[in-house]
Image 1 (tube, helix red, strand yellow):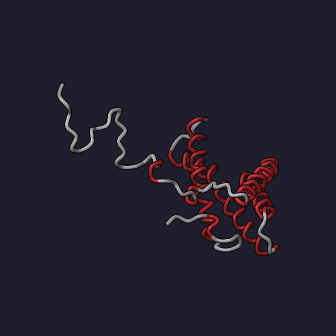
Image 2 (cartoon, rainbow, N blue to C red):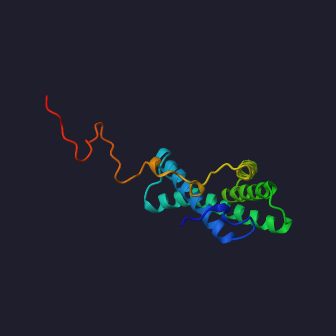
Image 3 (spheres, rainbow, N blue to C red):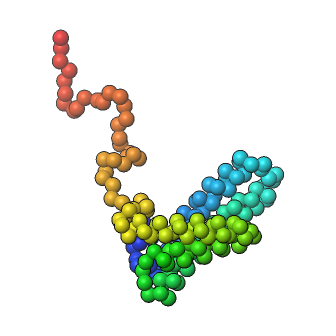
Length: 166
């Protein structure tokens, strides 16, 4: 059964929440680093390419893990479960992203952006908007990846059907 971020209240099950959010940050970081390596002047050799992927991906994963930990910490310290905890976690995660990159301007911009994204995430979750697909119940007939779906233009006649003669 897949794990859902809001399966447990904020401030509990922190390690699994960090792993859950870091997984999505890793996917986004690998996508961004792949685009960076392909579209911009590519490094030569395997080692420099791996270094470039690590340079792009690691700060994003680290900032996400730090932000998720700070959300849990601020929930436990403040004894409140509200969107302010998410804003605090987003700001700290953005500042850590800028510190990983080594630029003050990046840290300030990322702190504002990550803070607002986390605030929006919690605000929408409190109002019932679902971002995580594991929480959504999908009917079986809507699933695109069904194994036995017939996508032909003309379907076969039903079993036992006999064609008429003219």
